[in-house]
Length: 249
Length: 317
Image 1: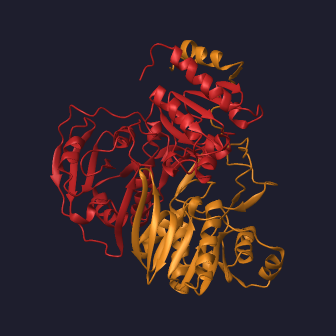
Image 2: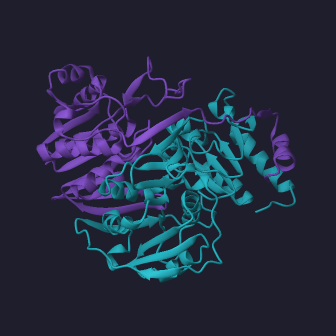
């Protein structure tokens, strides 16, 4: 079984982002970038499945600018076998990314495609579902547990009401929740070894996919700030304030 | 121009956020039709027809719709989409799972999780866990939009009498099988719609200690929330998680206890009307969004808090 895992480079989750003064976006120059956190879970799960002898190859793929390749290199350092970097500049909407991934799936013929359930930059939560629509494959979104059976997966999904379990036939798409596993750190020897693993570079323009944005981002602004609150001295004061000032209890 | 609203329900009744989504749909265009897909869902379809905002109900029933599988739902809605300019549903796990599958079939770039309708093609949505707001204009002919339920008021739920039209079911998608759903039942108000939410974080130190949160929640008639740290540590189940990848809540009162206030948590609660933070670390980021901050050891503060609440004669529910 072959697993393709899609990873995205985003502003590191610990960075407090800043909105550009001209309203065109957020500041990304000299800002720490990392792999989108749930994409790390997707890689970890694929590598674990391979280590359990249930997959033969794990291929990491990213779509994006030159530096996006760092995320593929990181995936190689934690156990992916080889990488693919589809080069494309500018804003890529999930629809465009899913069309690119569809082309790669046609070529690579993986049995499973894993990715994070949501990217923490645009918070869209679309790409996996869109790819499964384009391929007409089953989708298991927000996965927190995956059991690999013969040509089937039993997946536990995190839903608003609690948990849902579904069984999907391979080939299939799984989008991973942060609770799926605990991603490992790359060891130094593995980081060195990863440098020798191959990464195939493909220009998005060679795939015959129209990636031009359909959405116009007219403005990016700071959310309204909350007015500064106060510190109360003790619990009695807190309860009095809540009752008499805020009138919420 | 007209809007197709996708109703969320459990085959017996409408889920509350359908009312919020109906409000958002009506702000895009007044001609709102609603589709309900399920099995033996006539009662829920009737409720839907009673929403005054809904002009027509399209009801689709078949055994393979019983468990709301996106692979079964999407083709039905794609077919119906022909007659509509917009497809709308809630950006909860139901809508998040379903809508992109519809959008891809329609070759439309979806606009996720909007918090405001600016015009029929322009919407406001949070990005970067709500640390920035983006104004997005869709140039697609058909627009797929998911709405953040807590950013729109629920619509009236009675007084309407829309016609209910039966629509032929689609084929079953055989590669996905529903196995089971484990819903956590609770007598407390639902986290997403509660007037008061009491949340605990890593500072609670154990699952046992979470009963302190439960006691306060019971006293206030509140829902129980948690930070991702508390959920990951196993103190409480995942359906209580508030934050970027959990639930977004906008209660009148949010009480954060032993929660430091990571960006990802703030994303899920900072629109609450009144925020209280109890934390022994005076530098914790949660205090930057709190209307009332109490710097104290929670294990001393919570019992005192209970005592003070008990002194109050009336607690509004």
